[in-house]
Length: 93
Image 1 (tube, rainbow, N blue to C red):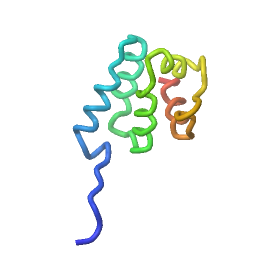
Image 2 (image 1 turned 90 degrees about the vertical axis):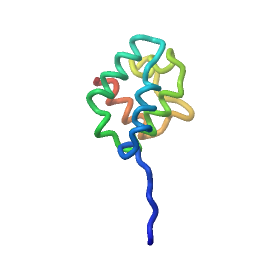
Image 3 (image 1 turned 45 degrees about the vertical axis):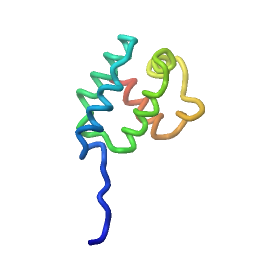
């Protein structure tokens, strides 16, 4: 048997549940924006978009809100093309 089984975000309900749980934030505005975004887009997110969202969710609430509201632009470990692309989608949500 050749090839290997790769678990993706879309194929693993536990990964999807974990991402949704991590999207619940202490800052209500973040919680609302992220929940609405996932409600509309969760089933179509690519693994690259999930990685971008995971990187954003690693941030504290206030820096995350500053990025979503375009008060700041990504820097350091989150300054990646796929993170910027997902952030643009979040800003439109």
